[in-house]
Length: 157
Image: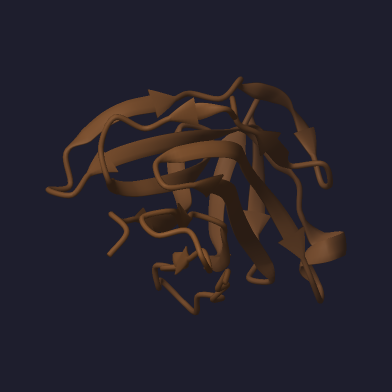
């Protein structure tokens, strides 16, 4: 059985299910979104205002501590679709142990141009995490964190 839960504002998604007929195998498939708050930034001397209406989504697919796909993207709705660009952005994937200590960060490439669409990143995939804990996607614009979406990776019961 696989369970998927969608997060709300600032919530963390926990989506781990036990495979039927296969004890001790947990599926780490999860997907969640969190709103990107409104913010302003300056890039190359131009001031940009980002309105509300953007969601930062993060999905992982895998089994136990093995992640076969790590993906994050921005989705826009309402006025946000036409009103703003993201400049100088990147998406990182970060991994923490159960105590909250960051043990690995897969830093994404810096996209130094401005883009309204195609704000997305595919992670390295096919990696086995050394510890249970949390897998997060973090969205940065102009060096400042603007959104974070996380999933717990827990030991199967």
